[in-house]
Image (cartoon, rainbow, N blue to C red):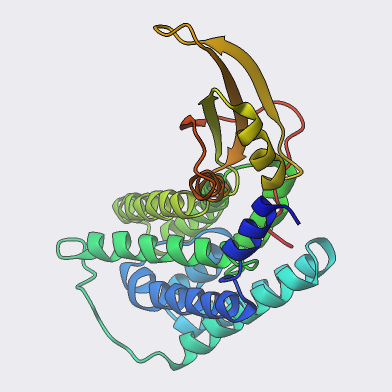
Length: 307
């Protein structure tokens, strides 16, 4: 086996099933914490079917309405996942959703901040969005999800290669319209509707940005390698991935006029640290830099979220 492939195998050994399942369990814990102690007290609207469930519970003033509707909606989405996304992703998502439901039942009642708008509601919203985004990213990175629109994210994302945060925003718009409509029917107070809209928008933005920062499956980087000895670089790129190709160009130094080669390759932000570590481990004699690019047009392979 090639040296580069050996390195990649060693690099990935820490991602054992125990580590992945532990991360999925922790994601469920974080998400349940965000819901119980930050989202509900702040009375903001969640994304997707969760938003429909939580809006209904606000309307009826019954916490258990959310728990019941959440269980029903997740069951339907998990059925869809079983047919469209495969056994592994579905079972991992089922485990996370089961943990969230269990914790929503057993978590004690605590208040970490005063939820009134004139007090600390913004802190609840910001921290809730941060925790929710981290939980979503952690679950997706380990082959599962926290359920709800993340199931559709896994399906739509690998079909259209959209950043997952965009799917969250789209799902949030639908649920927010539903929730605000219920609120207006109940209170007939336009000011209350605007207040909830403002805080919900902050939550969605923080959750979306956190998710996109942590989960970079569809972020692309261009790596440029300038070297006098391309024969030492090309084997590393070949060993790195059979799905990634490179471009080789001849060049000359601006001052020395010495012949050089410029090699460029596109990788995802998740793959970039692995490739850079490969270069370091092989002590490549080259000048290497990279930068983020916005999208590609053509046939480019992304590893699916559901595996």
